Image (cartoon, rainbow, N blue to C red; front, side):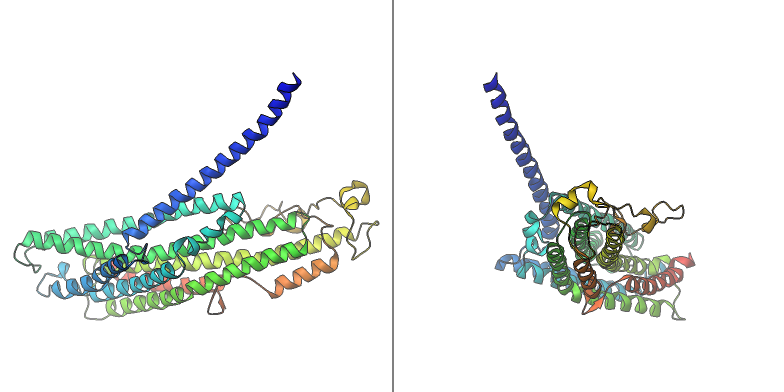
Length: 452
């Protein structure tokens, strides 16, 4: 009986290790599957691998054909100046120029990142094994969601563009210029135009979603970093983790700063040019003439908003750490002031921390500080899963007063966040820029769809 019991005790840890290994294997398999879907998307856009000569030539050839040659040829070949009012294209030059410039910036950035870093290193997947299981699972889920988000933005707009193109060619078949066979010529040109449109929109939205994905990884790290204030941690470990997060945010900001600034300038310029051409007294705007221009503007503004919201969200989370540390310091100081066994400024021994008879050494209930029970509490839309500024409990005797004060002072003077050439991308950025872009877009919608 003793031998059987001993054997059972030996088998149980082995089974636990096997189950843990199986779980890790499933996590690794899930990561490979999601990365495979991302690589499939990159291969579709011909930007996945440019390390070899023939793949690089193929990538640049497809890019040049769909971004430069096709828009120019289709614009001048299908001017259709003699067509009726519904089949004229007075705003096609603004549409093609806006889409092509955004696609050029996106392709150049993706090509540079692919050659210099590789997409595993670029997406921080090479260092994902060093993170906790919670961060790995959250990042894998967000990676899966990102590919679905790309389809959510691109496919409906592509369906609308396809319906418009098919209608344009079917109803104006005898007015649109063609080469030899009318039906074959129109079919080939329509397919090339749709391929060019979905390629340019997809590559721009993809870069914006990749930026959002990388920002989400840092948000997961910040949420885990907030747990340091719930456990008995040392200042050195807290400072080391905060420095690592700040370094990652600087790396991301440096990699994406040119793309974000260029996209902001191009989208704003495109909106202003669209308003300029639609507000001329000689134009008569309707859904047939300006529908494609409106669809283009909506896609560009959505892509820009994805980047701005991701940047401001992570900046808000990073700066909320300072507020959390300050509340933690205040509550710990208040609690220690009522402890007769510990002098102010001293760090208690392990016996004092674990012994309930040493005074108020248990986690503090600070609901009265955070007003968690108030009837008028409002939830922040940016704090989807957990609000790191309202985390309880907070340990009172984790660190001495001087160390806590030094940590809070450091966090106040070293605020982390996403930047663009040194300018912090906070909510002021988001409210200002999005307000301007939304005003321009609504004005354009009023000039086009509002005339129906």
